[in-house]
Image 1 (spheres, rainbow, N blue to C red):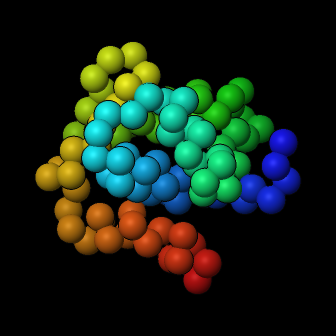
Image 2 (image 1 turned 45 degrees about the vertical axis):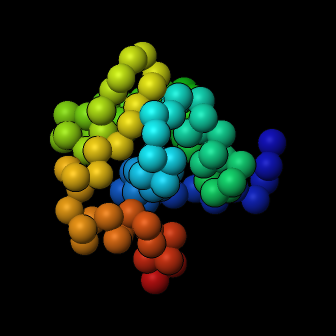
Length: 102
């Protein structure tokens, strides 16, 4: 287990997940999103209240699907809907890690 992963607040995790999906520009499996966040972004996803990182992201993406920002293509496969995300929100998603340190 990598000890230099940083925990993030829910809104920052949402922005990090959306950034991964937007940058990919294609459908991603939930396990690929988890891997990208943990290994490349160094984010600790699992917390004390939910059992696994996959469950936490699954809940988060379910909310994003209901909001229309993400489309669920199949079980565990998601794609971002860029036209459903306002330009200012996209900027916040792209720069969430800089904003989180303020």
